[in-house]
Length: 340
Image (tube, rainbow, N blue to C red; front, side, top):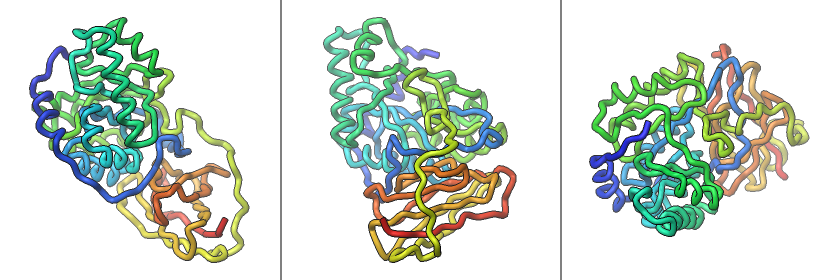
């Protein structure tokens, strides 16, 4: 669906682009080896996307996404990124994928090729400067595109991403209407939503309830296809780097302590605090068929479908993850620690 004009959305972007906030740091980087939920729990993946950030509401949006175990794609406006690079980094730290939404949110199809090039390349630079990452996805403002614009996108290594479902949040949709729109999502599809709109933030828990009831999970958008896939890009790990297993719970000079988090009907959050060393390696073991779907603040690799080896990624000595129960609601993970 292509919408030709959204004056309310433009006004929201202008009003909110000047505001900023900084949330507590944590990091799941764009390229982290996050393990997708099992096929039994996730029969498909959908792309939840939020345009026009960062805004004064980005911190609240990230908190809502994190507390519901959600990773999403943030199509950022370059001038907003340049004005608030810290919040852009926080999007990445919260486990979100950051993408390009032009520099000024202009009607690009009314511009020359050189103007289009400037809009997209300046945004690439702003996001790279803020996060150290180069976006691979681009969403044209208002969904307006043409061959010239697609040529510019290609020259910058960008894949154009529109949407299958328009939440109409930019047009004043209620929370219930946004939830209903998300209820139309099918495997591989993408929904358009926006940063800076309270009804959109309020809809997140109900959106997740609906997706879970249909065995759909939030995924990443593939740079190859522009469709939603598993958070690791669609590859279900069957092996990977294997670390020696510790022989005791203390693991040398470090200790890992589990702090239980929010529990839902189908999943739960866990935080792990590590003490004694900053050069730690933590092994997380789940009881099958439980599997981790989302991680933050550390690098995860997999030696088996239910065993993760976790290492620091520069975000401190605390990390977390969301576990899909997959029918086993009583089990909880065990952890052990050793030094590298």
